[in-house]
Amino acid sequence: MKLEILLESIDPLKVKGPLEAEVGSVACDSRKVESGSLFVAIKGHKLDGIQYVAEALSAGAVAVVSENDLDLGPGVAHIQVVCARCALGELANAFYGDLSNQMKVIGITGTNGKTTTAYMVRDLLRDGGFLPSLLGTVAYEIGDHVLPAPRTTPEAPELHALLHRMKEANCDSAVMEVSSHALALQRVRGINFAVAVFTNLTQDHLDYHHDMETYFSVKAHLFQTLEKGRSAVINLDDPWGRRIVEGGQVVADVVTYGFNEQAMVRASEPSMDASGTCFQLSSPWGECRISLQLLGRFNISNALAALAVGGLCGIGLDRMAASLANIQSVPGRLEWIPNRKSRKVFVDYAHTDDALRNVLTTLREICTGRLIVVFGCGGDRDFGKRRLMGQVAAELADHSIITADNPRNEEPGAIALDIIEGFADKKLFEVVLDRHEAIETGLRQMGRKDILLVAGKGHETYQEYKGTIVPFDDRETVREILG
Image (cartoon, helix red, strand yellow):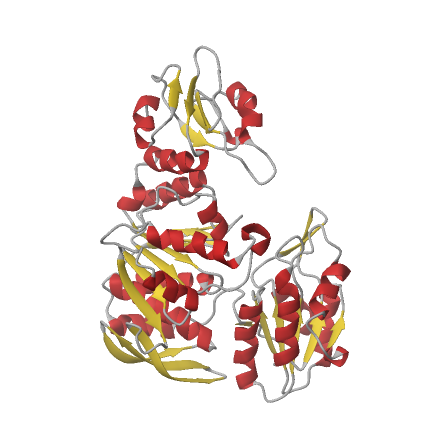
């Protein structure tokens, strides 16, 4: 695409230099620049792209976009903009052909439930006659190809490139988890979501957002920017969700869900046993009994969100009910680990106090013995939730084993000290900082009727410590120990 044509997608402050060059790619990482690239210099958490302009030009960039006014000399165009990250998304979108207006893109945001809801929506779409792809925390799925997911929501050039690959694979829809970081950093800029889903908001990522109001405003912005005629699916059980609905700033069609009597997609008469969960569904598309193999009231909420999306996409209620009934598990989300000794061991990604409360409450309902939990907290992240997670474990578990969970640049022992501030009784916990040993300790303490929850890492296959990534998988560790 000619640079001059590409620049029609943004509103620059100043343009200098020739605009006749053919642009072969849009990049914000100088290491990915090649001959013919348009380089957008964005500010990162630690580094500023302005520092790498010379490197990008040496690699063959034909133009540079930045917030600074630069003089690059003859032969190279410079485009000055107010917001480089905003421009990056718009340029990447234009370069790849504005694909979100050619596909049905569903974005799911919230503190908890994004992954499970995304998998449910993917299955509903697939069983409903669509050819969906999936971008999320666990993996990126494009047709029959499954790619590792370096981050929940990729940077704008990679995101739009993935949409291009989806289109080439004949996918007609995409289900995306949209993180708060992605929203704050404009990674989804240029995406015209057909449906956006709000699951909930609880304390997390305050190391980045600083306070809950800022965290909320970032999430809410996704719904406030939805176009008229698009759809917003909002959890009415969540107080932050109600704020979005009542704020009067959403012009899209709003569909609410929850146990709340005012919810448009509503659950009632819930029941649960060791085999799964059931509830009565009332919706604009009819009423029926929904059965899930997944456990927990929170999974009813996830299912309601998915049903709302499926209904908006025109999928029949009977088909959706059958699809949800067939979902056996979601990777690392209250995942039961089959084992030779028939122990009730579950692995879950819960790494906030609210998520841990949901999972422990669910397991408490089916536990006839002791409920034991192995968990920790990530280093270099929201410090305030550590004590809160300790309080939840002290309240709901019979015994807690506090261990390491991606300590990063912090000492695991220091993180453990923050967690145990939530325990009033020292008899309710022990500290075993080696995660393998902690899991082994929990398994060794289990009786026949007991349940063990290993929380915090879920699907993750590594531990991050002092800048080193070490292979580690909770699920494989349980299998290795129990057989």
